[in-house]
Image 1 (cartoon, one colour):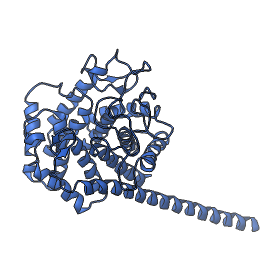
Image 2 (cartoon, rainbow, N blue to C red; image 1 turned 90 degrees about the vertical axis):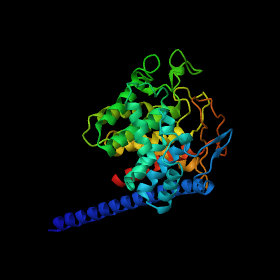
Image 3 (cartoon, helix red, strand yellow; image 1 turned 180 degrees about the vertical axis):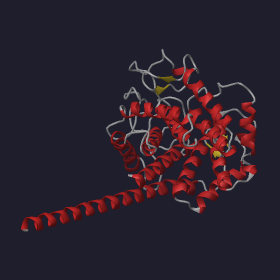
Image 4 (cartoon, rainbow, N blue to C red; image 1 turned 45 degrees about the vertical axis):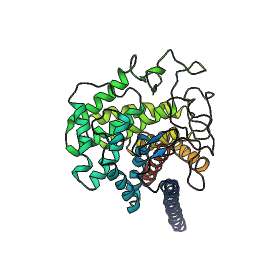
Length: 385
């Protein structure tokens, strides 16, 4: 009898301990999520306070309108933040931006094939889905339909373009319930992957991408390795995650994007730095080696989405994702919300160098956009663990 009572008491004690551990775990997850949201809010508030007027042109080496690709990537991130923290001021900020530009592209264009210009449409389409007003997507439909009236597939000759434009085709396909947009987006993606340049911009051996045909072999990094630019590969993994998420469940194209995301993620965790960042040159750590925020944010976003979507194994990829996020949050994010170690615009490791904690890049917006995407995706992932 005493043994039975002891066993029963032991079970109660173990159960209480397990319950306590479970409660502590969920409290930890809740606190962790709240911290991520605080960091995202801090970074975004810094930018919105610096740029209160969405119509203001961007002035550095020359004057540019506020719907160029750098700013459009920021708005991608803002819309992701709005989805987890739906503050009216975020929605109004994005809506004012779209309305000011009449839902058109850089230079008040409508008929443009240039992927960088199309990037703004990602936010235009998101805002249309929130408030379906036809004028919000009319220029986008006109631009993409004009492309689809031709057989040309070679527009995306640099890998950044995949992120700028592929989600536009897929979002438009979903809104219009027209699979032709899905197919054209895939066809253009596969052309960049397999045919652009000499034999495509993707190297299946290393499972990474050359930025454009200029970096095809025999071009190498100083150590003799192929040159794989961090942010260039970051644009691709962002696009793959967004493509997989946009397409309807069960659509066969999702498997193509998923397989490429999985391959890239496996290659990327092999070259993550010990401090959680990635170098600007993925296969040559001595080529302008050091912390870099924009590519790191994009890799964190792509892999966090991959885990949440069931494409990547949590036991393998969660630690690299968390290490990447904590590196940015602890070592790049300033107390006022500014993000350090962000490489300026360019196309290869040497551009915008040297980087530092305090150096302001020529454009701050696209790194912030990637940071917002990464943090919101990690926030969602924490909700599922």
